[in-house]
Image (cartoon, rainbow over the protein chains, first blue to last red):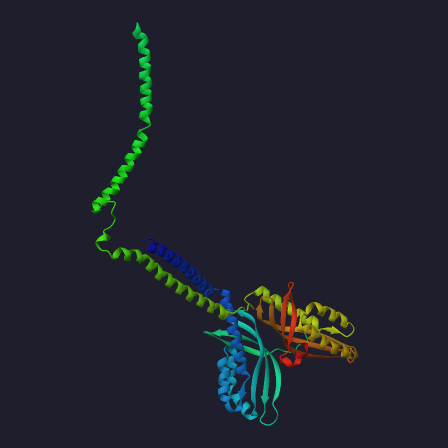
Length: 170
Length: 247
């Protein structure tokens, strides 16, 4: 009778330890999933990713595939920026076909400067290097300092404004 | 005559006896009562056993079926063991989920830790303004201030840059003002930070009375030492080749 009884004790201790571990890790998961700063941190990373992708899209245009390129511009944006791009669509297409240039962008760096998770608004700064290859002649590169705003639309973040940071005599 | 003399002692003996009796009589009832209570309790338990149809010494209806006592003895252990395994598995799964959530968020506290973020941002911006602003007449002032703001690789980077400044600034009577216009902390983990900086550089040559302004972009890797942020590396996005001489 002592063997099963001591085994019950061992099993009881193991079960209690396992229950304690499950309680602890369960709480850990729950608190991580409900941790505002962790969620905020994830949103920040998502905003930066979206911003860099959108900036990349908006600064990439090949005259041979201009139509899909401009479609991508529109897709990457929201609000007034999207309206502007939609309205200017035909104009851009005529210009790019005339110029016969291929523009590619390389994201050098970027940072989220403001993030209002609740309002779904964010501000970013992005450093890019543009390479413009004309129909004839050598490609030229230039760097641009961009500042933009993003707005959450549904579950994704899209650019609602973007522009070069002016070189002002501060 | 003897009676009056004999009577009192006998009475006193009788009294003593009665006193003794009462003393003796009073002491036994307590144990007697308790033993009665014990026996009645025992009677109840034995009555229960007897009503169950077995004598108190022999606690085995199991004896009729010889396999089940062993099974019954092992059953709690088995149930608890299964519980232990299930709970253990649950614990492992919870731990993995928690780890995934935390790993997805990373350790970057830029913006999530508001105070630390604005501190790093502000101090790096101030450092940049101080480091790259100079007056041809007082270059030592800038270089001295730089000593407290730089650390590691940046010391070497800055020395190389300032060697050029020392050559040209006095000739052209240059007054350079650098102002950070935009900056954002992209990474902040403990005492390390990376800040993307957009600055405006305004060069005024007092010799020609001309001012030129230009925009600059670079990232600053900073470390926090003794409560203040120091510039450790300046990344101008030109790859490693530009700064390789500084190790």
